Amino acid sequence: MQNILTNLTVLRNILNDEIFSLFAACDDGAEEKFAAFIHAFYEKCGSDGADPDFAAYTENMILYDENILSKSFASGIAPSRYIKNAYLRDLSIISDSLKTFDSCEYFKCNVKNFLFCKSPEEALNKWSNLYVNVGYGRFLKYNAFVYENGDLIPSGNGDDISIYNLKDYTSEKQLISDNIESFIDGLPYSDMLLYGDMGTGKSSTVRAMLKKYSDRKLRLIEVGRKNLSQIPEIRRLAALFPMKFLIFIDDLTIDDCDERLSSLKTSIEGSSAVYKNSMIVATSNRRHIVKEKFIDRENDVHANDLLQEQLSLSDRFGLTVMFSSVGKNEYLSIVRQLASDKKITLGDEELCFLAERWAISKGGRSPRRAKQFIDLAAAAQIKGVNIDF
Image 1: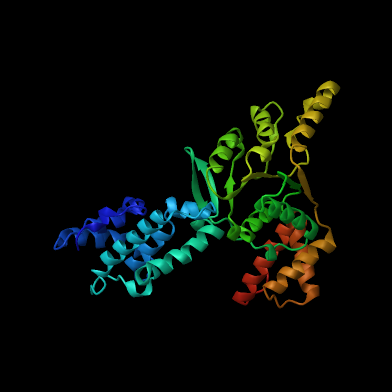
Image 2: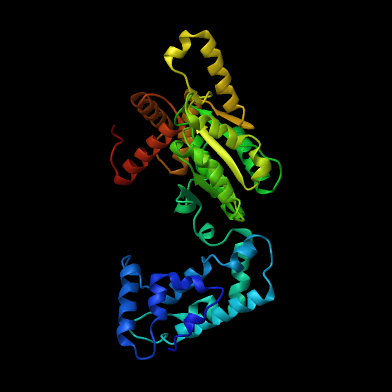
């Protein structure tokens, strides 16, 4: 194999991959370099029991590469014919290099099964549709991110929670969904505050919305309470990418004297007019996000100032959605729906009796308690034992 991979242009970033760079260094007859490449490839990819296929590895790397062509498509801008031609040339170079090892008996590189080897043009057409509709690069591969060292670092794909798995709270979910759809469609939208008792599904609803709209370029950046002052930096960075971002603050509560309070208020105030591709979404177990100390109540003047401070932050969120705690009927309704999903065979009377006992033993009813009980019941049913707690 002539080392023509060093001539890559648009796809040159893939040479930064440790495995692929070792492959690119394999010249004709360089057995020692080829052996080092295979060792590294098997060490990285061969631990899951599947047959590692280097053609598949390379195709994934090309698909998720962040380059001028993939970003152009994701931005809704058709790249010039020169960029397209350079990209197609790169695909052909990579394909020809892989075909050199197609029949190696101790190295799987099945180029016949992979699109970019069959037809670079067909691969470009298929991938460009993904870039346009879903995203590109790391945003095509991952849904959830954190902000570290001035960059967005993948943290996975959320909790893979489906809206279908979250029972009841229909009107609350509809309000949130409508607002997110406006955001995605480039219409006026509001930053959101979701508040209510623990276990009512606030955070789960946000993550379920991420899953629901992930194929429309919606992504999530989670921000810890300690990093609230970084939100302006995060929004400026997010604006560089052709995606839509939920800047997610889970369980938001801060002290009234905390400098993060003014930073957060500034981040929200008028931000949607400046940063059109990011929305702040916060959850809290308190309607008034700012903590009130007992000593504050002893001073009427301070108490009034504190109330105004609380309201001034809460009111920055254009949409506030309350997740009310559930009563017995609502709790058992959720239990029955989850039991049906899991195909729990208990009779209704026994199911409700055990579910109520579970809630009492755990300190109260909530959607979270219902899910915990059903998980316990499903495990017991699979094992063929009685539900015991």
